[in-house]
Length: 363
Ligand SMILES: NC(=O)c1ccc[n+]([C@@H]2O[C@H](COP(=O)([O-])OP(=O)(O)OC[C@H]3O[C@@H](n4cnc5c(N)ncnc54)[C@H](O)[C@@H]3O)[C@@H](O)[C@H]2O)c1
Image 1 (cartoon, rainbow, N blue to C red):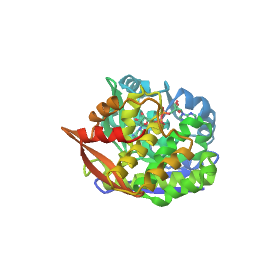
Image 2 (image 1 turned 60 degrees about the vertical axis):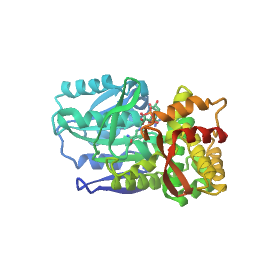
Image 3 (image 1 turned 90 degrees about the vertical axis):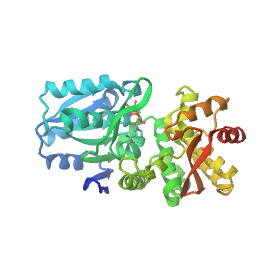
Image 4 (image 1 turned 180 degrees about the horizontal axis):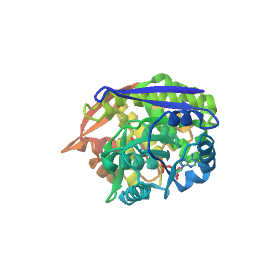
């Protein structure tokens, strides 16, 4: 079964599809590729993904008579840098890529972000396709055209907004994902429920077992709803100018600070989960929402076997890190808080007040 989310960008009158599939082979990806005209095709992936899916990709492409080059990158966030981009440019030059060439990024968010960045800059922009293989990349990173690399220890500091031709998400890629990485991706799904769709939140609450066990039905449901919601935000605020896309950062201000305060020992999604609990507790302390809101959020995060707190978290360090957040200006910070599940609000808070309130929140 294939489900389609169509993303329309009014600025460029550009639209593209996010195809969510549970097919065993890559049939619809191959059909899409066969319908395109290009001079050269490049599969950009990493060693981990290629080891798992190289045989399937090779066999499917061969059967369809599709020729391609493989650009094999090292695995991990530490390689999300300009050196890796150079490696991609080198391969493109070696095989005489021209403006009619197409890149296909097959992998997690790191592969997707670097493929998009290379595509957006090589010859001032060539086409690319996103084939995300982690839950986080399927529900978030591959959708919306944000590309980038890390530089001088700053995450995503160099990047572009550059939309793909289409996104192909196949639920079967997730079967080989380490379960901890999979669960970390669920935090982003829960986030979409909290900021936009109470029924998605309830779905995760009610279908705990199916979601954790990656039942095809649950996977199709959460991928479809999350992709739809992400697409909706991107359509309204493609380049993060109106502030609407900022709501997607719910839980992230605290999450990023937790990641850096714990020297990145915990995964991004795990930190976001705790960050969402903190944001909900602050919302309650400020009387913005009822007491059951943080309770429900904490429970669903616990149900997804994600951490809900951290031992010995240094609040001083945490509030210092928050001050470096992108949404921070002079003595105030814009927080995404909640009136209810499905009802986020942007709340500008004095930094001193935030530090005080963080002391009250039990993390
Ligand atoms: N562009 C955006 O809008 C956006 C949004 C959110 C996150 N991101 C970026 O995404 C990155 C994080 O993405 P991620 O969580 O996917 O991390 P990742 O790309 O590092 O993937 C996590 C690990 O899983 C492996 N992997 C990938 N697919 C697999 C599979 N099917 N089976 C087994 N292992 C597999 C990877 O090789 C890696 O070791 C960060 O760099 C972040 O900045 C970008």
